[in-house]
Image (cartoon, rainbow, N blue to C red; front, side, top):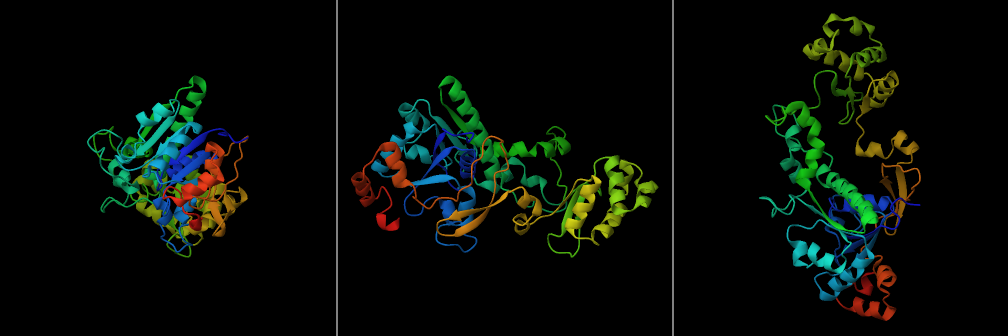
Length: 404
């Protein structure tokens, strides 16, 4: 049985910070009813950096699988009424609109709690709902800038460098999913709902703790930018044939690993070299040691270096690009790369959910088309008849039938 079987979520999220949360819960078995405006839907449907078929963009597909899409115009009284009628059938309400939007829609916590006292009301805001920045809009890299993440990237003599991972959005979303799960367990024990709020700025600081611990003197100074590593033992190394991602990253953090590195390189002379005898010596003579290691890595591919050092007991990873990920033999063997059937795009590859629960297996389904489950959900929970649905489709409340 899916772990969260029985949890139902009224999902008013958009873009990524909220959708990553509800997708994680859907992958654990929750029934997620994604509410979208008719016509264009979640604005994430239009993030088309690559050519796709209509509104079904990769960005939307990768953050909205396993959900049911219900198209309602919440700016229309009838659309808002339908949402409020759905509310008592759900355990959780989630939103990540900009400041003031839910209040304008009349969907604030006090209003929803009056209708459904046990509701878990969860929100993601850039800076929370109070404080000097509360009215400021925020998105992923803005959160990473204001949380300190951006300041730790790049090289010491250059500007900050944009990180590749969207921890401001998805990192916040996963924290919210954990908080919702905790609140749901508490609700099962007490019967009481509660309000949950996550600030993206605060959420990102969680991922900065190691950088803070290792470089800011307990907050007394700014942690430095360290480029790609620290000295020769924790760094990035080039490999054959010299493409933009032909690198490996290794972390040699103790004497045993240093000796294993020398063995993997078949360079026992380095282990006996007085310049590199102790950790402090390897740090002092990092330039010379880096050159010795680079000569070896440049003669091999990144996968060869990873295999040799991995088998030798040295933490070392090939720099896999986003093309490599879908073809990586390890991810393939573990079934992490999956093919799902999408109604307009056909079979598309997706990366799976990393948490593997022995007694909870939830197959991944493709993200829904806009409004795909509107009639199904309104019949299932509100008992609407075909005639009532037809009347709603004739209004601006639901998508017109011709658009289905």
